[in-house]
Length: 439
Image (cartoon, rainbow, N blue to C red):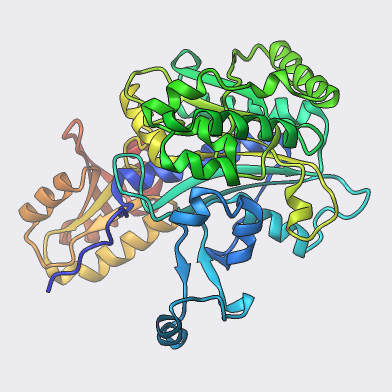
């Protein structure tokens, strides 16, 4: 039986892989000047890392997280109908988002000891969620993100947003095609009272709300602002707004963030219904959408999460970050007519007039590759004519031809596949001349 990839996953190869590699390179170029270093956390974490951090009431934890159970334990779990009896180290999940794992790393390895400089980390990793697959929404997807742990000043929020917009622009998305939305969700001092207001509002409009939102009213009423049900959206349009219920400190912090964004010349829209989908956010939240009419929802966003480090077992530590989705950004780039992948690296092809000269071709390939050039050759014993056809199919810009006459003269024939001009090149200048043709 033919093997097939799992539903909701994609293979990365060719231009798609070049685009993913290019996105990572742009991330390094953009985040490096801000002092961020790259990090990679395990694809598997203990379930509690995500439950504590993301929130037990979120759709990610309740409906989408892939649980991991080893084969040795699977029969026992099936028999009992639950994994509740497993020890914490046996209860694992595939990473559905990046922040919780990075915070776990920071706490476990004490990367922000008392009085030290903040930890500035960025990542580019696959994530896993059990969603219904559709365009731009996969069960294995890829994210680029940053976590700035230990900075409480509003300037950190603003710099994070500026860095995100710089990243999109460096990828080729013009600012005018993007809509940056910002809001404040308050903090532990003012949000509980606001949550209760929204909960009461939902219950007062119960006949207009879907069953999911009635359930959210009890566990996380703010998530009702994200509901896609038309009836819920219409009802929530008149719900209390968080910006009308911020405490003085949260309001001052939010105003400072906006002043910094104004000073940086970053255009934004205030959206008092923006709440983000994960429980750990506090104060500043932001999202970026495209204006091309074909958007797959948000292509990136983030915010401040001042309580997450403490939830994961560390001391109280402020933090802010964002994440962007590779697959969704690729859709936005396609709609904008931007080819992030670009052309593959130019290559040369080494051909021989006879299979007896295979060892000479082998030596020439090694020489050119050690000079940093991409090189292809014949490994099927083709004729010279067939090798030249293969060079064309491979997109070779130059062909190095070796025959008895060339070897006797200590040279090689170099053909420029663009101009079809040929020249004799001394062997000791071959790598230099091939590099010039490829350039």
